Length: 122
Length: 122
DNA sequence: CAAGTTCTTCTACCTATCGTAGAACATGCA
DNA sequence: TGCATGTTCTACGATAGGTAGAAGAACTTG
Image (cartoon, rainbow over all chains, first blue to last red; front, side, top):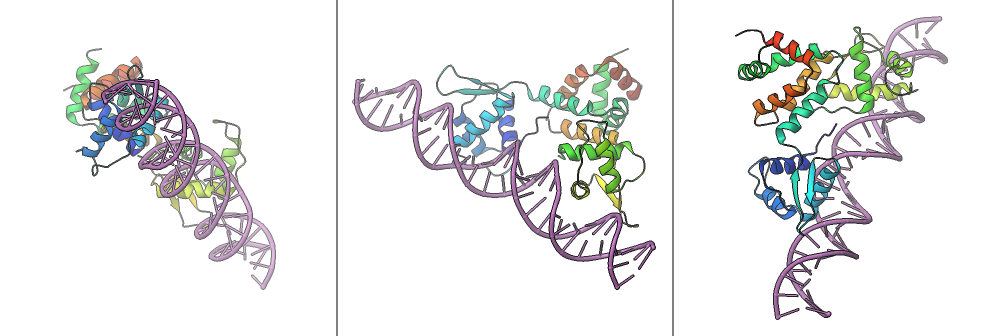
């Protein structure tokens, strides 16, 4: 499973929140100002680049090598990624029905409503 | 999040599969014969004990210290644990509705059926 | 085209986690 | 009281991830 470290997660957060592909420098700045999470950290660009490479190797990020300041963007949307993770977790258990039963019990009423709608009739 | 290593996972598998609490020795033997996963590994009991301690610290395992060969058992059922993990994953995303929508799309028809039943009317 | 600026790649260090287990300590039974 | 059995302490190697410097590639502009 693709478990992410803190910085890796932060970078993905930013990429998911931005429609256009971003350069390493833009990401560094974004992390510095980061209203999200901890204190805005001042990282070296190389640090960001290393993280991006690792994310690329994991298949979470795609890089546009066309123009020089390479631009990076997430391969999947945050929602797809999360849903995929949930599914990965689900299939680790032999008795999925039972897992789903417990899972349903843990979601809010609103979410349950959404699920009913999504599952539609029969 | 509580991500488990391979051995840790194997130990949890065994604990989940066994109703009674087990001793370190019983676990070592079980791992050795392990029809599950890789080749039955011959581990030192201390190895198993170390892993059990770590799992205890993570709150996944409870130890009965009453009698001498301490006995270990999982704190939650495998299903509860898995459902909890799924929920943890779900709440990392801001747009849960969207995540659920994708998630529903990834489950089998049987599972969808189960979900409909579980969500019942209203 | 040459020199500087900018970006990328390589390499490396540090820490935390995990697999693994020996050595030493504790305990209960013969 | 001493052995057998079990537990705790300590430790070492491997991998992942956070962090970044040094060196190399490429673009910019005089």
